[in-house]
Amino acid sequence: MSQHFLLSSKAKTLRLVDVLRMTDKEAEMAFCKVRWFETEGAPVCPHCGGLDAYLNPRPNGTTRYRCKACRKDFTVTSGTLFASHKRPLRDYLAAIAIFCNEVKGKSALALSRDLGLAYKSAFVLLHKLREAMAEELRGRIIGDDHNEASVDGCYVGGYIRPANIRENRIDRRKFPNGKRKVVVVIREHGGETLPGVFASEGAAVGWIKSRVAKGTVLNADEASSWNDLHGRFEVKRINHQEAYSFNGACTNWAESYFARLRRGEAGHHHHIAGAYLLRYAQEAAWREDNRRSSNGDQTRNVAASRCGRGRLWISPAIGSAISKRPENRKAPNDSGTFPPYPQNRQRPRIIFNAPPRAYRTRTLRGCGKCRSDYDNCYSATYIFGDCR
Image 1: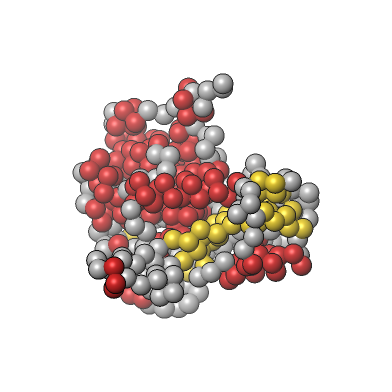
Image 2: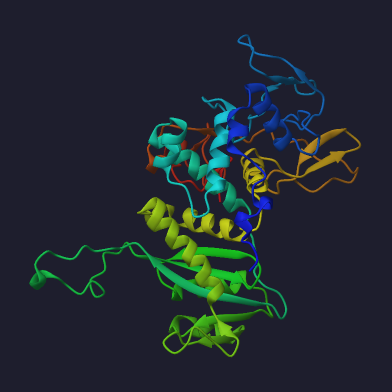
């Protein structure tokens, strides 16, 4: 019998004790190498993309850079969700390592005890890490010609406690409280995972059609909600009352994802509010897709996403690095150079001690798309000044 991956040495390339023993300078250099990977840790101005920056420390000695092109100051966390941080960078690296070392999830209460944080601070920090995991799922299309994928749903929440006296108990299936939601997952066999949250399985059919490539063979159970998929895809159906796998039809790949989601809910979180259910579902999908990656690779990927690291274009005409984020960049002009970095975008300021409901990204001028003032921008879907 072969050894499980988590028991092998390939799964353990990062030790938490090494992170906790880092000095402030070593932790800062680690963040520099993660954020400015393309320049091997050399600072890149987040305002104009200039590569000519020099050290301009603050009066208290903390590291700060100044761009020679735009004369603006910045740090390694400027323009990221770690900007204006109050704790040492070593603590944030440790939080990412602890979070990625868990297989099913990490509760905010446990993280607050590990790092000596307030519960609200740990809650917000973990949701930032879940948002980093969700970045990899954005725009994902499942399947391809002759590939197979499984589609299934899992109902979460809406529990109604039965009455004490038997005569007073009701059929809870006929009297729902409106809080019950379904997590619908599309998972390619041996490939990637994409979850979504809906009021019912039938409401997810349109989303499934838009996220599954043509030619993909779908596997679904006997629920009538999936009948409309037959008009667009080849669908294999399996009746779970008779068998879990029969004639090549099964939804075991989706069930494996739901097992991880359920274990995380029952063993770590105990209760998931409906407003945050999608983030937890995306976290479970990321963990399922990266279950064969080492803890060191997982930590670096999450840290790089939260540090705002994107692929860089180096323009030979102006000699500067320009972010390749599609929402920030335009197409190159006729001369082969790129337009200057948009100066009208306000970087967010995160409120670390805000209550869990007010996990928000606050900008000075409000949301760039809906034009609402920042006091109304409460949702976690508001990031970098625009609502998604």
